[in-house]
Length: 71
Image (cartoon, rainbow, N blue to C red):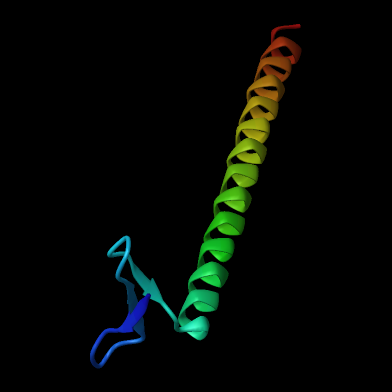
């Protein structure tokens, strides 16, 4: 049986004593934020990979320039 908790958007399941949020808007906002954070983390990881690639390219260019100057 579900019992409303006073002055909240929660109900309590009397069998399991679990609190259940009945606010669909808040739940949807939470999921949207979680999705946004996951997307941002993915973008950051991609940028880190690209930055490391650029660093490696610059190192290689430096080595080639030094070799050219030695000739």
